[in-house]
Image (tube, rainbow, N blue to C red; front, side, top):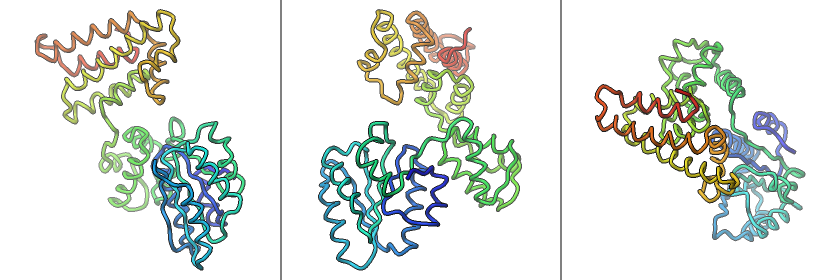
Length: 337
């Protein structure tokens, strides 16, 4: 059975499956889903827990032996199996498939791992979990889903906020659910349950957006001009040195110019990104950048970097370094000047 994370608590109140698989990359929801399973199991008499981490030296026979040994004791236990990757190999797949064919009655198996891709969802062991237990897939809360998530989180803590206040909180945390949850808890401590006005929220909620130089680069590649502005001013307010910001932008622009040159010569984008060692998670951003600008425009941006460098070194009296960086980063995001 597959359940979204928001339906997990209702399921746990009614019954407890022998196996749970919590998979995904969003840390707050992932951790809360696993905690909910552990807590409900403890309430139902699963008094002890054995943690197993399938690292490089992990012996999958330990899982088989642990499952068999538990039947010798009267107490119920949780086997907390943590997979750093869902790619568990032939030995791991066999061990889990064998376990899932006959799950011990006195054992609850909780498996946690990062996001499952389509191939892994179709594997024998994941299908077995789906058949005898519960699969909870965690997805990032983004775009239009973020405001309802924050509203529900506020209500669950006894707080009621108008749409304006919810939007303000969403804007401040920049999609960081952990930061949003922390700010809601802090707001509850400061004012207690009840109505939350935008003024109260502004007075108590800190700006939790993660203004880092790499996030700025990614926002520019994605073409999100408004976010570029917020992140750049956040870096300025946090006292980040201007040369560090320019270094990050120039390094990315130089790499994009090189890849754009290769693409202009007829090479496949995937091949070019692979040779440039672009991480899988960043490939969509790089594709957007290569689609937005050709080699000539990326080289022009590289020349702009030299001009910004001159401003940072004081060679252009009267020019503001942060305004020069803003001009460069927004041009990178697609603003035409």
